[in-house]
Image (cartoon, rainbow, N blue to C red; front, side, top):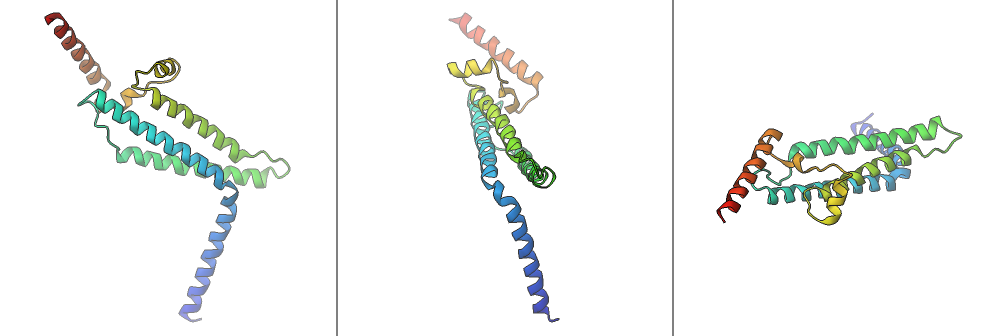
Amino acid sequence: MHGSAIYDHIVRALFAVAGGVLAYVEPLEEVMYVVFASIVVDVVTAYLLNRRVASKYKGVSHGKLSSQRLKSLGRTVVSILAIILLLQGIDQYCFVYADLKLPYLAASAFCMIQVVSILENMSSCNDAKWAKLLQKILVDKTARHFDMTAGDFIKEVQDAKADEKKKKSKK
């Protein structure tokens, strides 16, 4: 065999594998778009929360993206997409007589978790009435965006309150 014939066989094999993968993934294309969109909205609202914290608590938070958080986001995306693909195989080949739609159930659960995270991001460090109402039932994520330990933050808040009392007493 000549070098070009070997190359042709390798290219054909790669395209055959790629076609098989695409045929397996294609039915889940829309589900993956929705999952990816929910992740993007969560990232955007987390970034906006980070900016709100940075502007409200100057010097305590930098309000910028970090590579560590983006790396964690990459792991999340790969994990949920792998789970969806695995569930597609289980649904298609193990539960042949029952159409359980397992990938759709997993994607729905993940998207609901993302919606709660988005609501937490939107309500945290927000003084609006609707945000205060949501903060009563959801976690306030403000403290996660500080560049300091919890003890340092508590001391910082106490110092700020003491300074505020001094200003009021001078008036």
